[in-house]
Each structure stands twice: as C-alpha cells, then as structure tokens.
Image 1: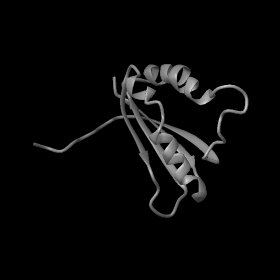
Image 2: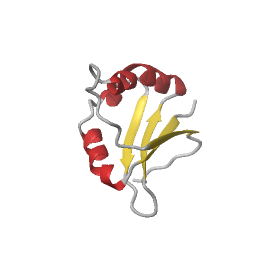
Image 3: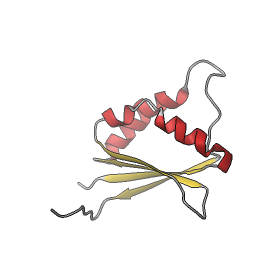
Image 4: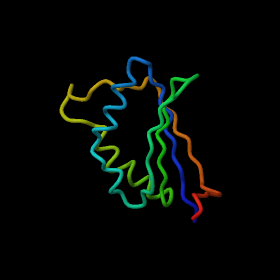
Length: 107
C-alpha cells in the first residue's frame, strides 16, 4: 500500500508570516509520535504567492485520520474560552495524494 501525502495550503498575509513560523516551531511535536507518521515539512513561499505548504507523509489514510481526530484536534482546540490565539492563516485548503514513485540520493 503506497504512502499518502497531505499538503495543507495556508494563505498567510505578510504580517502574519513570523507568527505562523513561531507557532510551528513551538508546536507540541505530537505529529512526530503518531502511528503511521513518516515526514513533516513547513515550506515558506519565496516569491509570487502568500501560501505556505504544510507537507506531511503517512503510512496510510487511516493513520492520517487517527491523527486528525486525536492529537491534531486536541492541539487546535486550546484551553478555556478566549485562550486560543487568532489564526495566522486567512485560509486553508487540504490536498491529498498517494505516493506513486519516489527517489532519494544514490550511494
């Protein structure tokens, strides 16, 4: 069964970029300990767009869904009323892919 890739496309206004990056840097790292998790990258736009890409790769769709319903959901709910900070992104779209081919450096 091929791995699955999930790319969360976040539209981030220029004045919120630093906030977004700091939040990711200080996140709880729950994803790294999730069953079926294979890889994470936060990709900053260089030019021509205000969209960050949050790339994750998973062993299978079930592993991703378990993370979404468990650790991810808990991490994004925050504490008591009013404690959750305003989102840095003004929009979000989730792309889903299956890995058909991959390669790494040889030797």
